Length: 338
Image (tube, rainbow, N blue to C red):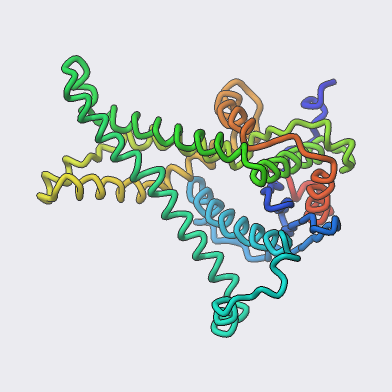
């Protein structure tokens, strides 16, 4: 009997690799385990809270947007916690005047401020990289297309614009991952990412969480954040192709310049982004819950890209992943079912 056939249940527990550690989020608790410079494992466990969202926020598509925002906030908090233990000896006693001013001015609130500012900066950077840049690169391609009569009609179409922008976004995403995956520090994060996936697989197959048991499982998981991001990029091509929005529409309607028309088109894509995220979330849920030809097709590209974002972990990394997993396991396994 294969490991897939032995699988007992698919869990809702998910995680994230952080600096020298792993964060796991269960139905009731969230834990972050970090390997400190002295070799010990520091584990922080927090209750998720008992507040139940109103039915509206749990509707399909909408729940995907809510989950995405939650993941950003929780992930950033976990990342900041792990950063406290990296090179801590070198940083000890070197607090700057600016750091002291921030502590005096904001006190305990400074961490929350840093988290939300970091998320805002990340979102702005992502919009610039995955929306603004592809838009202007596509405009350049369209101009080149006008010089080639046989293809000029196609390059001037809305279909070409959406397809070319989508392809550029995917190339940027995969290229970025290919570059950073070779960096020493990032490679270690990706090893912890692999440890996270293996640990979840081990739990889903009902085996005891030991290094030996965890190691034998795959490091590629269908419900990974990498798969979600790639699926979002793919779905965006379809959604933005179906939306009859182009720069010329704004130019004719409002008499604005071509540059302003292009930027208004980018703004419209941002407005419709929650729909793209919501659809992608629902597809990831389906792909993670069922095993058939359709779900395998949905999962295949994301699983392939995980060859870049996950690496085989060392035993001590698996120990950290297990340390973050155990505290979030509910007493009743049914509470953690997907």
